[in-house]
Amino acid sequence: MTSFEHAPDVFSLYPEVFVHAVSCMGLGHDSTSKKIKKIWPLYFAEYTRLCLRNQLTVDTCRFFPIAALFGTRFIALLAVRGHWKDVLAPQSVESCVKLFLEECGRRGVKSVAFPSFNPILDGYVKDIFLKNQSIHNIKTVFIYN
Image 1 (tube, rainbow, N blue to C red):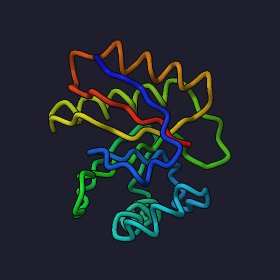
Image 2: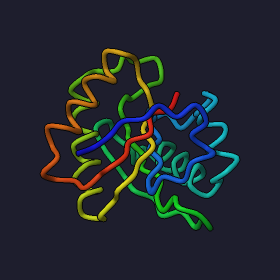
Image 3: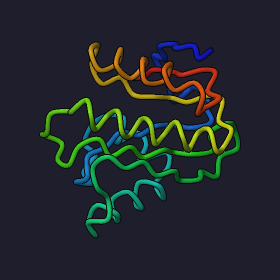
Image 4: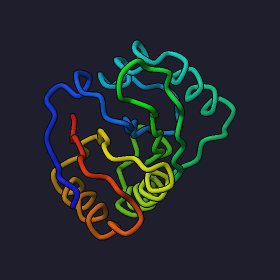
């Protein structure tokens, strides 16, 4: 069974996969994106490149390998909206999360850091994780802001 824990400082943890929920604009002005850009600049450059070349579309999930000394093996880019001003649509979130869970199942992932969207969507995402237990082996989900 998957457990959900709130992580006040997700960057002090080492989940196997760090989820970066993004728009397709490549701007990343939020505090999490700024930290990711500093910690994993090669990933962030690739994300920006995909956006500038219009190669990133809503409802997609891509895994990027991370060369790290501890724990974190991948950043999972979830393109949940086209523009940062767009309202998050539950169907976009659901399709991205399902793609993410399928890929985690293929890769044998046991722990992930997942962003908090808002209280209503967070409950929805938790339900998607729990309803799709058969396609993934995730034991711990660290929810971060």
